[in-house]
Amino acid sequence: MTDGVTGAAPCRFDSAAEGIAAEVAMLAQVAATGQPARLLWQARVPAIVLPAACLRRPGFAAAAGRAAAAGWPLLARPTGGGPVPQGPGVLNLALVFPAEAGLTLEAGYRRICAPLTAAFARLGLTVSAGATGGSFCDGAWNLSLAGRKIVGTAQRWQRRDGGWAVLAHALILIDPPLAAVVPVIDRLHRDLEFGTRVLPDAHTSLRAERPDLGVPDFIRALGEEDTDGSPAPAQGRAA
Amino acid sequence: MTIKFTEEHEWLRVEGDLVVVGITEHASEQLGDVVFVELPEPGTKVAKGDEICVIESVKAASDILAPVDGEIVEVNEALSDNPALVNEDPLGAWFFKMKVEDMEQLDAFMSEEDYKDFIG
Image (cartoon, rainbow over all chains, first blue to last red; front, side):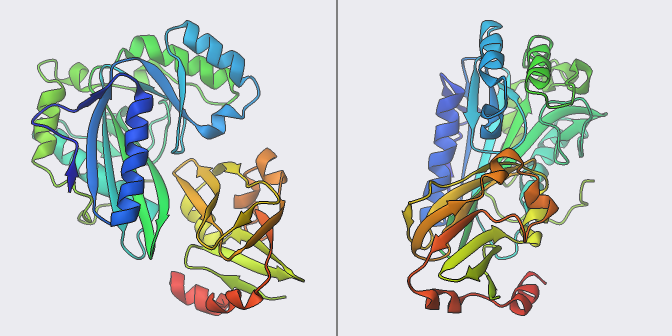
């Protein structure tokens, strides 16, 4: 297994674009070799990352200019969903693995949510999967703590000989500047006419829940879990 | 009208010397609400297995592959404006039409009955 984790430190990139490129390269590698891989990474420069679909929305250029002026330039990513923050305080986990026959999207989400749920439990925090109204990039496979989103997830599937390679990505809110970025994402939602609002109270972070913990603690807790992309035990499905 | 299905959950409908390609209801249900479709350029020559479309939903993004060797002759621009058509009518929401010289390539794909067995 290729492992992007060294001790309790993630790979650090200047830009989230580099982290995204590393994930795409891993997906291509797994598609070619069938060997699972994982990467934990953080970006130094703040940005808001959004799917390619957003780039085609009317008003995108003006919205991008406003976000950049607020200190949050926009970057595209190859997975679906909505705009999310990247930068200091955000930890990313990418699991890339060959899909066995019959693997579903839901099973892919369970596979990345299971080790994260266990890691939070090791830190004394009980998270559960499900939609979190008012959160950015809301979906059925958020991990939330008392109704507040703390992890977002996404997937990208790429064809490989005899099947698919799956990139399952999780964005973990360790200590991001939510008070600063959530209004920018909320404005993006309005500018790009998503029809949904993004609210600060719909999110939390590891540091907000456990001020004594940070990235190294979470990675250590995660390190005790199997994150090589092998099938997770069956869990209840989210709504 | 001949219709075939691939293990990648694409449907292929033969119209004269053209093959019309879309994704199955099973695939659209798996993906959830489709929000973006990136279509290929007409005139593009493709080989079987080439990644020629990207489909993005609220749950995931995925590639659509060229099911056979051929040339893209037409794309469904309506999907660019309204990707939700893929969910509303998967068998009607075609993605592209291919000119295929060797229609025998389609013999390798599943019938509707076989595809139903395949997805269980």
